[in-house]
Amino acid sequence: MINENLTAYFETAIKNNWDKVSLQDYDNGGLTFGELANQILCLHSLFREHGIVKGDKIVVIGKNSAYWGSVYLATITYGAVIVPLLQDFTPKDIYNLVNHSDAQLMFSSEYICEKLDFNKFDNLRTVYYLDDFAVAYDYTADFIAYNKAASPVAQENFSLEHIPNSELAAILYTSGTSGQPKGVMLTHNSLAANIRYARANMPLESGDRIVSFLPMGHCYGAAFEFLFPFSKGCTIIFLGKLPSPQIILKAFSEIKPRLILSVPLIIEKVYKNKIKPSIDKPVAKIILKIPILKRLIYRKVLSSLNVAFGGDFKEIVVGGAKMNREVETFLREIGFNFSVGYGMTECGPLISYDGWKSTKIYSAGKAIDCIEIKIDSKEPGKVGEILLKGENVMLGYYKNQEETDKVFDKDGWLHTGDLGIVDRDGYVFIKGRSKSMILTGSGQNVYPEEIESKFNNFPLVSEIVVVSRNNLITALIYPDQDKIKTLNLKPEQVEKVFVNYQKRVNEDLPAYMHVNKIVLREEEFEKTPKKSIKRYLYD
Image (cartoon, rainbow, N blue to C red):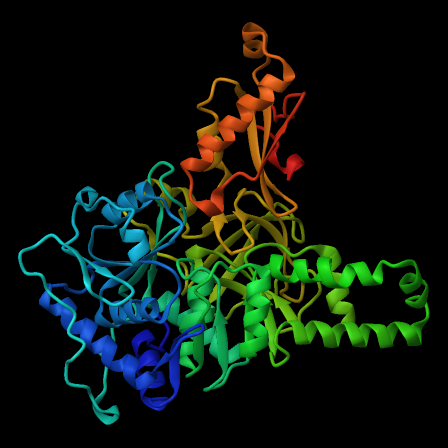
């Protein structure tokens, strides 16, 4: 265990920044650290009235907001376990995961509550609206209300119990209802280790402003757009809207954040739409061959790019997926302040990182201070699976020993399923993902197997691979030729059938998992000797 305590981080941040704004909704007022402190204590009182004890589970689901952050902080500082669910999950997913988590309480946005049948939950005592903490549904006769009129505590009297770092802090579900759910169990130690490293290596100070637009149900957004900046006394502004690049860049221009966390798609779209068309013009290509003019143009491009991201940031940290090589090469060449990190939910999330001034191009930085990386390869310097041990590695998957045993070997190494190398200077280079997970532009994880399993239920589907192409979730399908002949279907009829399949599948999936395009193949997919499709050929 590390020496730094998670709840001590939050207690110190609140006491030292009492009158500064802590959590704020975009286009709305915010809570000072002092106001948030009293809201946390009122929620603690609510938990006690319900008989919640340390280790009990509390679900939060809804759009990113100041109240979302309050519930998260109140839960883990109480010693209960937060279970953040993605707002895009279908009602079927929500029933399954809330019941699997054994949650006692749930805080949910009103628009989500309207879709739910509350009779399908097994263990809940009360459901509260996340928007104002009013009771949405009560399973008991107690009807315990949130008391926001409780006597406020003074700054000098505020304190939190320091929950031991060994205790469970969060259960994060990486997907919906495909098979047995996998809820990643993260301890206070895991979250504290991520915060400790970020505080020592990422540029933030008390009073700095952060735009939170990544899904808080994922640990990338939760750790680095929320918990770490909160521990430093920053103002966190929750976007709370569908995070399209246009909306995000508008928020950046207004808020001028000091640190930006992003997925590659945001930067790649700015490059593709604003920069590449200009530098690809015939005249520009000629000018760029003249060194002195090239420097002037690159300086101008860099200036406009910095303005697009608010103009006041110290660094952009990119994570969640591999960055386009052409984009990374260009941005390094013009001197753009960005770095690429590597992480996964099972590590809460950070595995490797290095600041923009010292990192190596195409790398994902160096292993962070609390983790050990080993490459499972037969020869040094050769590509192999990335294995991990460390303070921030998960305990395992909640109530799923079978899946836990699959990822941990007998020596305790976590098998990431990712392929890479570590060079002689300690830099990690990701060479591929043996896992097929897709990261969407809004930062959501999509597991192709979940979509493929739904299509495979249809009679005309013989083989399918779901990939991301041009940032669109695309289903590559080889139809069952025998059935087509038997039914005597014409090509236009086949296409109509698959359009219907696409519609039916999307109706059963959250919006971020919707299949945008279907491509029908004339040949079978290439396979291994074991008859598995060689997925990497079609990414």
